[in-house]
Length: 594
Image (cartoon, rainbow, N blue to C red):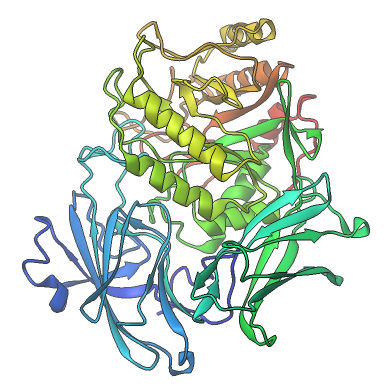
């Protein structure tokens, strides 16, 4: 049997030696979360599952969509002999939600959060040449209030809540690493000075004389290099100047990527560790109501992408499926996406980088109480979000961060828990990344005066009233979301503004009478009525000179929410030339390419 999703899972720090652990694992549901007491750690499990697909998915071979408060995995492997002398690192790209990992009966790691990777050093439990029994328990009680994104808290799907994901849902893999090893670099482009700043963290013991060498390459070969000490600062930093004749800015029309080779050497010049990465030379700045990329105004024609698949749920069935979603979006006339209520796979962002696809990254905060006055949040929102930013900081395709989505709480005279969490996530994002704009929450309850961007969600289906509502932006009076007619946001402060959700036009001519089918507004009576509505809504924002972009809902149908440009299985619903033409207006300054 071929190994599913066998591509290298961490494209911004690539080592030659690694072992993919996707494929068949033992599996058992633990509906009472009593498995540890019942001895599941020490025995064979009853079922089999195909990792990295979640047990709710058909691709997993399980296909159970009922609640699973806890699940167990078990697999026996032999660690390669030729890794002798190295530490052995066990990586999980994502496990939903609370994971505990044992190797040969020894606990080697714990992690909370269903969307970011974590690593376990298993060397003390199993060294090269040994057999290793890996056991994973994932706890994921969907009835708790916690970050879940669009996963349904009820048994069945409804409206914009979908089938849950439990346990392992991204690649599991193993790699050898030296005693002192390179970690994921933080790469910051600086187009003003034509350079990259490389912050290279190290994992493991330090010794005198360590130094780092970074080589910058193109197809023409090495164009620059820098050496810096790695034994003086807690986190070594290097500036890599790009020769002027080799400077190419990353953009949607020219998504040029430089290759980086990073080496760690000791005081005698001996090579201790090496890895390959890449970078894009790209700058973002705010100019009045405009967001500029490399000094150029690019109208952001974004589409809402939720990253769900009929057979894999939140896991793409293949590498090609990730590429195809970007390709389909570009062919429809969009130049980017708002990655909605999900931290997407690293491989998706890699393809966005190389295809010139603009991305707003978002934390899947839904799972808190969403009715007004009952927001319920925890510190884990901030910790999980920071893990996501740290993972994705160096992707040039990411042009903005959005910690929260559609938070709802009436604006009163008391500082609330929602205020604290919104401030905390905003400030933490700004502290970790000062190079990109931050939107405190997409739509609804804006609470940060220093917000870089302001937005609204507007599903008015009438192009005329929709256009009139947003024309007031010219007078500094944009449309603001309310709850039950009451204010939930502080006043607009003149920031760049966009409608980050609109459209959502309900169209599924194949839907049968009584079928669970949903979208915004009244369903068009004909496909021509759909085109008229789509063209009018897009025109209202493209023709608004005070608008820097928009985000149309959505790229594909998702289960019963059938308002996508494509069907859930990615079949074409419309004439793509007409959909594309509706977005090719003067506001779209830069030509689209794919």
